[in-house]
Image: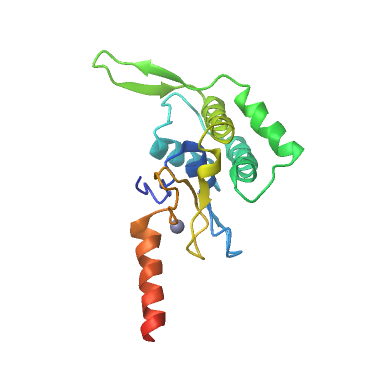
Length: 181
Ligand SMILES: [Zn+2]
C-alpha cells in the first residue's frame, strides 16, 4: 500500500484506490489526477491493470471519471448512489473484464482494453458493497484527507488511510496544539 507515480494506493482495494484519483474532496480544493488520457494510462500502469495492447483516448478519460464518481457515491459510507450511479456501475461491470494472461515463467499480466479495465474496477466495487467488507469502508479521519479505505483490522477501529502519511501527521498536530507550539 504505497503511493505510485503520484497516485494514492492506500486503501487495500482497487475500486477505492480508483476513487482516490480525485483528491481534496473535503476541502473543496479538488485535485483531478485523471485529467487526460495519459493520466489514465499512468494510473492503469501503476495499479497493475495496464495492458500493453490498450489504447487510451480522451473519451476513455471522461468515461473513467464518470465511473469513478459513481463508484465513490456507491461505496462511501455516508452517501447514497443515485439510480444513474447504479446504472453506470452496472453498465461497466456488464462488459467483459480484463483476463489474466499467463507466461511460461508462471507470471501473469492483465490483458484487454481500457473498457475491460473499467469493467474490472466496476466489478470490484460491486463485490465490495455486496460483500462482508461493505461496512468496513471508512473515510480517513485527517480533515484535509478524503481518501476511503477498507478497515481490515480485527477490532475495526482504523482511522487513517495511512499511519505514515495521515496518522502520524494528525498526532503531531494534536500534540502541538496541546503544548501550544
Ligand atoms: Zn488520509
